Length: 175
Image (cartoon, rainbow, N blue to C red):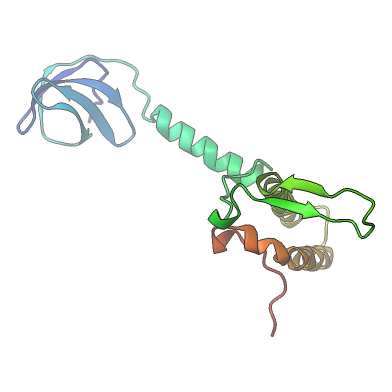
């Protein structure tokens, strides 16, 4: 099967006459005169009116972008969007000293929450690096994993701030 290049003209039984405007690994994007933009499978039935032979990338920009996003999420310490629970939006955290002569410190909860999420994401990256390390033997990895589990357990207090349970810190589970 020869791939059509961008600019090829086709006649489709259902959609009529159209021009290939993009090619992905699975579809042609065709702008039809009467039906507008449609995607059709590469192996769909149609007649070629005019073939434009062109070097065609078999992967679209969108597919490259999605792959890159997936790689960055997995291997960087860039945090994904983690929503704060609705009841805390716009709220603040007030630290009140024991000495009445000192002033309170007020921090927007959105700022505090963002810092908690950054800590969580960096711990996750550390965990991935420990698991992938070839410089550590298995026992050292197990020991470090136990420390990480305890760190997560210490942070479970902050789970109340998260909108989604899947974003929560999880420490050691009772046996």
